[in-house]
Image (cartoon, rainbow, N blue to C red; front, side, top):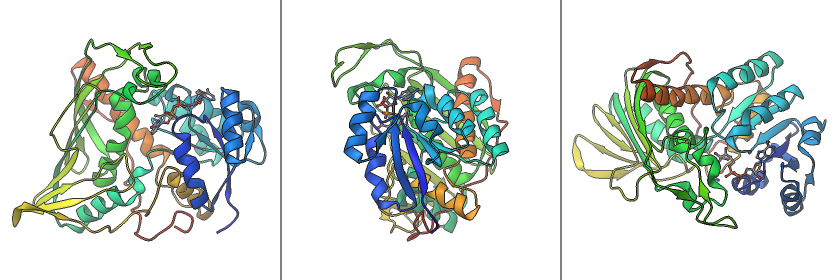
Length: 366
Ligand SMILES: NC(=O)c1ccc[n+]([C@@H]2O[C@H](COP(=O)([O-])OP(=O)(O)OC[C@H]3O[C@@H](n4cnc5c(N)ncnc54)[C@H](O)[C@@H]3O)[C@@H](O)[C@H]2O)c1
């Protein structure tokens, strides 16, 4: 391993704590500084983490920093990423990649022209859960894949997040917020999507912040809160996807893959690890636990950036890539357009399945 990739984080809110928890386990990343529009928050977090607090402008131009980890809200993702690229830095950001593909495309072009990397969450799909499900699928144990179904539902993130307004603005909603976990998994399993249709709605339910200093504050809802879609993959597999902030209770399974010989019950792709089970035509009543067979073990948020750092060092493609996130964004954007215009949409982007992650491998030595 060469010298670590030096990292500055912009946006140190709720999710940043999960990244901070992983830095000690990732020797090819070195955290140098943090910044936030809320400078008092940046200062407090910097003190906790034993790093410097800088202004956003200073962090973006700091010559000690190779890569910006962009943990701002979705509406700021492209602006911060583009400024990082302007300053000659790689960038890895939280999902979604952007509010719209029209914003994301120039950013990816700029990065490619400059020889810089763009990476994007979710990196949960590099953990043992989704990678084990992929290994089972690729082994042929359920035969040829035919379809998959996703049903992610919840009452709404305002019940737990202290600053949930962004979840109800463009870039949020159940699709742009939770879709990336499931759609990145589906592309990991089956490859690119070529065609989508969809339907979307929202209830008149009033949303208010439930926790933290602003509890009781109403939240304007500017997104669809119940979305369903049919995706056709280039390999012929059909995925059906429902995501919702409208559901109080359900018994529908979260995520399943159907093949000619059996079914995989897939783990929650919002987590790095989780149980994967298989039932086959020979014993349809018995769900067999699958031993962990692939993926970064004991992983957490930040492994995708470490994987990108290793890919930079070894001049290989990184797995949690901007290209994958762009394809996922185009799927989501197209689902909403298909829903609003009552049409079927052919996608214009495509992407390769990312390389599988071997069990026992580490992002810094991949
Ligand atoms: N909270 C979670 O559980 C969770 C989980 C996975 C992914 N994410 C993703 O992480 C991102 C951040 O979510 P969060 O929950 O941490 O939000 P948050 O609101 O708690 O934190 C975002 C931080 O970014 C700062 N910020 C906003 N705009 C900025 C700008 N232009 N320049 C500098 N700083 C800016 C805010 O001041 C805040 O401190 C989102 O894209 C979200 O989808 C969140």
